[in-house]
Amino acid sequence: MLKKTDPDIIKGYLEDSSNLTGGRADGIYLPENEREIIEVVAECNAHKTPLTVSAGQTGTTGGCIPFGGWVLTTQKLDKIINIDKELKFAVVQPGVTLEAIEAAAKKEGLAYPPDPTEKKATIGGSVSTNASGGRCYRFGATRNWIRRLKIVLANGISLNIKRKLISADKKNQFVLPYATFEIPSYSMPAGKNAAGYYSAPGMDFLDLFIGSEGTLGVISEIEISLVPQMQKTFDIIAFFPDELSAVNFVAASKEKKDTTINFYEFFDNNTLQMLKASYPNIPTKAKAAIYIEQEITAENEKAHLDSWSALLERSGAALDDCWLGETDKQKEELAKFRHAIPEHINDIFKQYHQVKLATDIAVPEDKFMEMFNYYNLELRTSNLFHIKFGHIGDNHLHVNLVAKNDNELKQAKELVLIFVRKAVSLGGTVSAEHGIGKIKHDYLKEMYAEAGIKEMVRIKKNFDPNLILGLNNLFPQAALTS
Image 1 (spheres, rainbow, N blue to C red):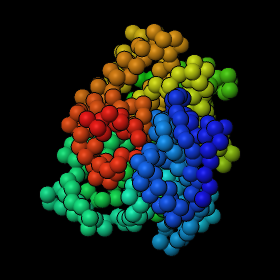
Image 2 (tube, helix red, strand yellow):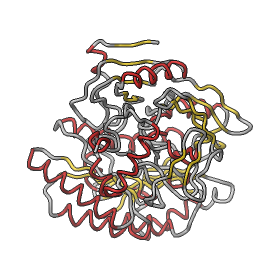
Image 3 (tube, one colour):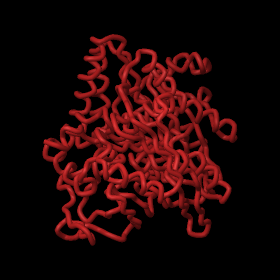
Image 4 (cartoon, rainbow, N blue to C red):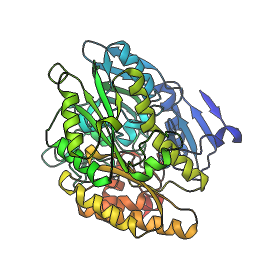
């Protein structure tokens, strides 16, 4: 197994898209199979050496950045082991990228539905954060599509956990051959959620590890469900004269309960202005936009364009100003436009050498307008440059706050915490898709309170008594020893 201790090599593993600084490590492990993962974990556990798992380094919360100890990178665990076309599933190693899975599945006429936006991300990282993307509106997050995981625990034991193999009993306990423990008693939001250890009455044991951010074990193999590839989609970006018109358009469209719609994405005026240098054909009067993808079926093929045209007209958006995605090339251009948003935002944060300050909040359907209006009310009274965009179909927007000096940074941090508290009061989540990592500890505590964090620590200690895995992910190290 490869080990690297060259400081110049280590430096490349001390960053992700969060801009979190100060990371350090003694070395890097590069295992190529489960046997080598077991060796690494057992060695670190014997010496109580912290071990941080690093995947595609595309995360936004600093989860893969070590603060001491060693890094286990999954970059050589990048094999697609099997794709079963008949039963529609794939078995992959954790370091396989989403774009590699997409390409391999496509050859078999299949697709992986969650479709997180960042295609360079790995499937292991996606499982660790219960990641999702635009198509989560129709298909749900990563959790829904995991059939089986192989997990190497801190003691070096490998578990092969299949869905529906072990469930919590009527006492809300997992009874395992080597331990019995209660699931956490806190309740979780019914919708999108990637904040903290999963808990629900009668829950599946597999779900405890999905979204655990590398703190309970190291993933060595993943079995994912696939679906038949869509034969045809219709993509459109519609531009609106104001934000409210765009929001109302989505609400009106969702009332139809059309199960062929894959996603709705929202872009505010600042998003459009940010992109105008690269996309000068954005309509001059546009103050907001909505990006939609719809599967075209035999039932809607003839009427879908007329249906959208009528609804757009009633909502103040002209079809002539819309960008249509009917050919593969057009669809690719629209997808690039969507993906350019986080890339531009990340560049802005880097320009100001700032840790990424952004909400990852989702709220219940009937609370979205209250949350949206609250965003606008608070943002109007601040001088901070902000960008609102994201998965409006799931009532999940990212509000990015860019601080240009220390005073603005303090204000931005206070404002995000205000938004978090509002979301929690509405029954929402502080992290719908990116996880907690090392920079959102305070938000998790707002959501579950001190008692909830203590329950998570109890679960952590069941699986990792020497506290070596994913140090400072989900909760600070101090919470483990208090």
